[in-house]
Amino acid sequence: MSSGLQGRRAVITGAGRNVGAAIAERFVREGARVAVVDIDPSAAARIAKELNDQYPDSAVPVTADVSSPQEVQRLVDEAWEQLGAVDTLVNCVAITDRPHTVLDLPDELWSKVLDVSLTSAFLTTKYLARRMVVEESGGVVLHIGSTSGMFARKNAVAYPAAKAALYALVRSLAVQLGEHGIRVNTVSPNKVGSPVGSAVEPADRARRNLVGRACTPEDIAGAVAFMAGADAGFITGTDLLVDGGALITSGD
Image 1 (cartoon, rainbow, N blue to C red):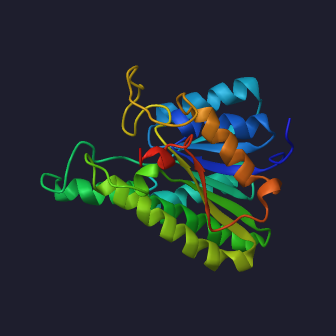
Image 2: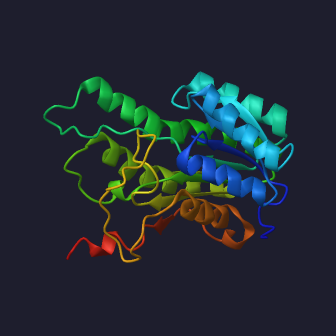
């Protein structure tokens, strides 16, 4: 077992299912304590209970809408109260505007997708980093990107725009927080687990990569665990692409 996360205290948003739940499990398995954050209180409670049943006193459920500044501030206060000084943030929250195009995308859905998929990254980093700076102990911030932010989509416009903007945001965050010992990066999957906004993965979901299998939430959890740990201590302001080679097949 790796000891890179032993004793860490992490806030993991979107942890009620899919990639976020897998990351929470990987963190506690490696000795961290986590705040399982989700907008759905039952999902947060369920995952936290499953983790605590297997790894006692490893997880606390927190309900929050991370697109709301007030909710994020409350989340930070609650996480600090229950875990102690938090040193790691993993933000997995996103929604999509699929299957819309620019011709029929409702204005309010455009705004909601950007709020949830991009503004949440700004808010969670802002309010958690402020507390990390006060602690003067450094920290790690990771946001889940997507290959959708790296190429054009026929069936969505707000989601790829949000994910593309996330990469620019993370670079600026890394520059601004580096002097405080806080590393900021992204980890980017391609078609992992169930599609954004869906609870179940379609059995016939089309994929095209070089590995020849589906990306799993556990694949992303392993990459996040590496990027959060000491072995990645010299990595900041960049992206770890975990796509099975999907991007480089696009020219076939």
